[in-house]
Image 1 (cartoon, rainbow, N blue to C red):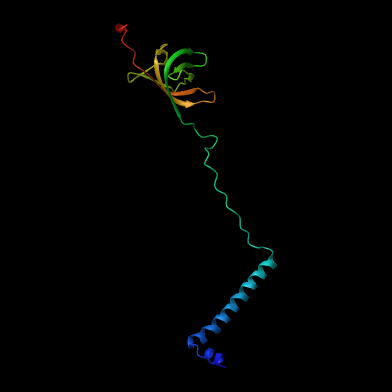
Image 2 (cartoon, one colour):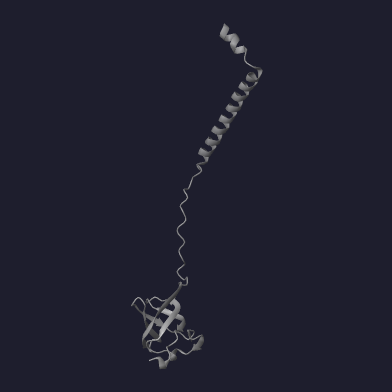
Length: 150
C-alpha cells in the first residue's frame, strides 16, 4: 500500500503532463498512420532520385581553340598552299598557314609576307588547325643582322 501512496505523492505538473503527452502522442500516431495509408492508396509514394555529380565542363564542339605561339626559323616557303614551314627551337617542323588577314611585322613596322626570307627567325601567333599546323594571325620577324656584319 505504501507504493500506492508514493505514486500519489508525485508533483502536480506530473499529473498534468502525463495525460497531455499520452493524448498528443496518440494524435500524432493516428495522423502519421492515416497519411501513410492515403499515400499507399494513391500508389504515388514519393521517390527519391539520387543526384549525380555534374559532369566536368567540356567546351562545346564549335569552341575556338586556344591561341598557339611558336618561335623558329623559316626553312621553306610553300606558295601553293600559302604556307611557310618553320623549324622550331624543339627541332619540330610546323606548317604555318597564311591568310589574307595575317599581319606580318618587322622592327615594329608592317611588312609584306613576300619580304620574308629563308632563315629568318619568326614568332608566330595563331590557332592550331586540324592538321597539326598553325593558322597564323600575327607573324613577327626578328630583326636581321646588318649586312656589313658578315
